[in-house]
Amino acid sequence: MPLASSIWRLCAALLLVAACGGCPTSTAPSVPATTPGSAAAPLSLVVVGDAPLGEAIARAWQSETEENLDVKNVSLEDLAKASRLPADVVVFPSGQVGQLVERELIRPLDAEGLAKAGFNRPDVFDQVRLREMVWGNQTVAVPLGSPRLLVVYRRDVFEELSLAPPQTWKEYQSIADRLAEGGKEDRAVIEPLADGWAGQMLLARAAAYLTHRDQVSPLFDYQTLAPLITSPPIVRALEELVAAHKGQSAARRLTPADAWAEIHSGQAAMAITWPVPAPENTPAPAGPLSFGMLPGGSDVYNVSRSRWDRREDGDETHVPVFPIAGR
Image (cartoon, rainbow, N blue to C red; front, side, top):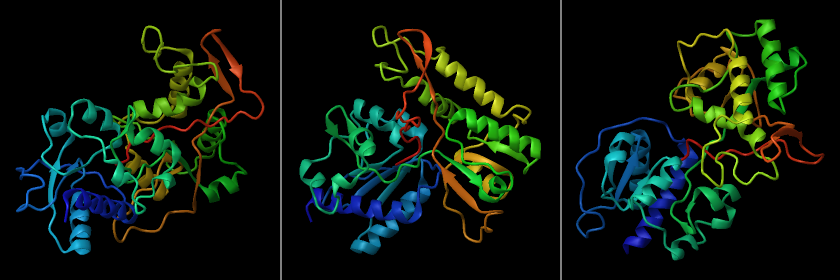
């Protein structure tokens, strides 16, 4: 079987695994490489920062083709030091795509493979197809799943207090205060603020405040490239983030998986996270869970005039945030 055809069959197997099992997070040391694509060697795969996913892919590939798959698991630390990736296919966190392309560790996908009916490129969500899969004007990756931050809440608690899912961060804070007053669950709200996640949470909160219709570049001055990290939108988002967690212990910072586990077990009434595949024999949720879009904002900062504006009638208050944990 030609190597290119085998690689695209492997991509199909990867999509199947992603659809069935999600992307659990784990790390494992790298193992010695084999020569990729040689006649004597099986198809080779490097999986970055997710050893269980590599094992699942190998099982799916063998079931599909009755062939072995040479899987090498590497950590993010190993990836940062790598000068080459000795494999036919690489599965990596979506946030690493720019680094891998610029360091020439991956190369663009061939147009023939992208045009295959089995891939069905037009069906890929627009933001993923036009932004996440490409670098410059070339397609360099295909998505295996891109979880988005959501508001997850206990429907029974919200109904008891006559609360509606928050549409803006102001409404979100009002609900957080109400839940705290009512003493609902151990913590009123929880958000992923562990190392590596707090900055993502801050940007997700600031997104709606930053994206004025007249603003060309919300995160950097487009003329000087100076970061706008101290700009009023980000300062407001930071102040609101602190207010939402006032009085909570800073001893334990959560990842999205931790936040999901806590609201699933009834230790919070509202969380920002996404669903995570549960291990076997996991108890049912402590109460019915519902989901809502990440809050937005009716206020947006006008950088050119150094003032806050109100969004016009009909303007969307929610601003989509690119995925931060996909593969």
